[in-house]
Length: 228
Image (cartoon, rainbow, N blue to C red):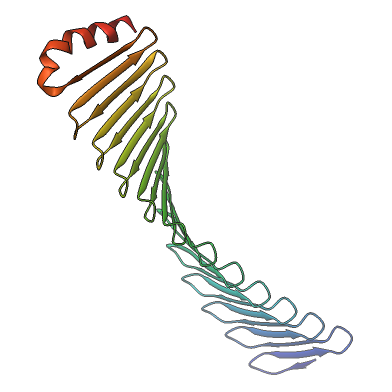
């Protein structure tokens, strides 16, 4: 062990440890564990060869890199940034929430107080979860999905489809085809804009008419709905 005014240098052969401490901080290297640790006023730098870990802590936060796991972690006052090469994951947490990106899976996840936002590049999926439910948007498929406790709202841009499922049934709207479909326990209500057709099917039968004839059948539909 060697001690001077600035600090202390200690090397232990049995443990394979080299440690140097000065006024600003300490440097420690362990051969057996393969660890390099440096602490200064701003923070701490630690590197482990066996584990392949580089850790740096400063007043704003922490930076950690693991070679074997391929992980880069940075924490600052606002949050945490983590990147894993093998898993291809980037995670950033701030006061509002968490942002995670996975390259292999192509996933971007952002969580805030209201919920979670996830984006997958390969699948082209944007997922937002809040207290009431889940919002899912898929770019490739053009799908927007919202699930509440009572049901599901699905919207597809390419196909132009909006679907809402409740405990009692399903509401489906397609923009390109101009189709609105509602299914209840007792039947199905479908409206097609291009054809201007409203179709209602119940257990007893089928009612279909166009917009021009809407005035004639509105009362009938209202009665059918009331019967349900």
